[in-house]
Every structure is written in structure tokens, then in C-alpha cells.
Image 1 (spheres, rainbow, N blue to C red):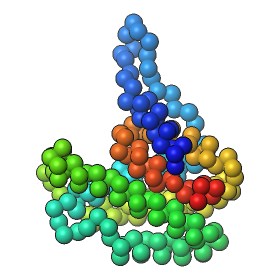
Image 2: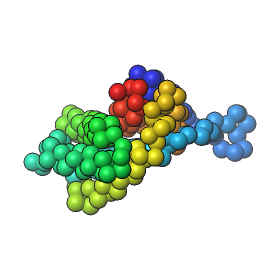
Image 3: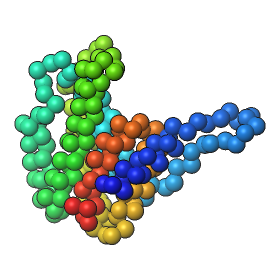
Amino acid sequence: MRLLVRAAAVAVSLALMPVLPADATTARYDVQVVPGGPLLPFTRAAADRVLLADKVAAAKYGTPAPIDDPVREKAILEAVAAKSREWGIDPEASVRIFRDQIEAKKVVQREWYRRWDSGQAEPPAERPDLGQIRPLIDKLNAVLLDEIRLTVDVRARPSCVTKQTRAYVAVVVEKRLDPLHATALARALTSLCAMLR
């Protein structure tokens, strides 16, 4: 986790680096994204899930719906465990990884609530429909679980941490994640490598 947090600072600074016009006389600063490796698809899907947390926060803010949704969380984790057993992969590992996705989403939601409550940011003028957002999250969950299955061997090796960091930096730069979403993505990857659990 600490390695990813350090990588976050580098990646965010790269993502925010200006790109000068082609005819500029000074040096250009185009970001060249290094190949993300075998964990790139998982990391991209995790980032997309983190980004959807903005809409979830906007949908829930000012309503009785809490950030923590234990009923839905339990249903997701039980489905993940069942599918993992069906595929013959470690259900406990899959559940840990998915719990990280859930907690990462909460990092984003809580920060938006803090900003809106403090007046640091304007509350959303329109409330997204949570019923339309959740199917998108469900699709990403399916992608994430499939990637967990496809990367069992990669995630078990000591080199996983290096590969994970490479994928993380590549995605932060590619999607130009701000510090909030870069931090949340790091949280989402906490248990991805077996040696970090």
C-alpha cells in the first residue's frame, strides 16, 4: 500500500503535467504511458469503479441512503465467493479483493460528503439515478472477478508488486486521476497481490 501511495504522487504529477502546443519552442511534456502489464485490465476496471463512486455519492447525498450499505455489500461478497468456488479459485482471496473495491468507493463518497458539507464544493444540482448506476457497477464487478481468475498465477508471484505498481501508474496517468481518485484506486489494489495480504 505504501509503495502505491508513493507511486500515486508521481503518477498524479505526471497526469497533471501540461502538454505544450506542437509548435512551442520549449520542450514538450507529453506523457508516455509505459505498458501496464498483465494487471492492467483489472486496474482499469477498478479505476472505472472508483470513478463511478462520484455518481453514487451524488445519488445518495441528502437522502436517507447511507454510504455504508451492508445488505448490498453482503450480497456482492457472497456472489463473489460463490462464483470463485465455481471457478476453483480461492474465495477468501476474491472476497478480500472485492472488499477493497467497496472500501475504495467509500473513500471517494466520504470525501465528496466532506466537501459538500463544508462548502468546499457545490452539492450536485441533479441527483443521478442509483438504479442506473448499479448495473454499471455490476458489469465492472464481473470484469474484476474474471480478471482475478485470469491472474491467479501472476498475483501469487513476488513480482506481482512491481507489476501492480506499473499498472497503477499507467492507469492513473491514462485516466488522469486526481489525488482523490488515485488514492482510492490505491486502496482498491491493497489485497491484489497475494504477498500483500
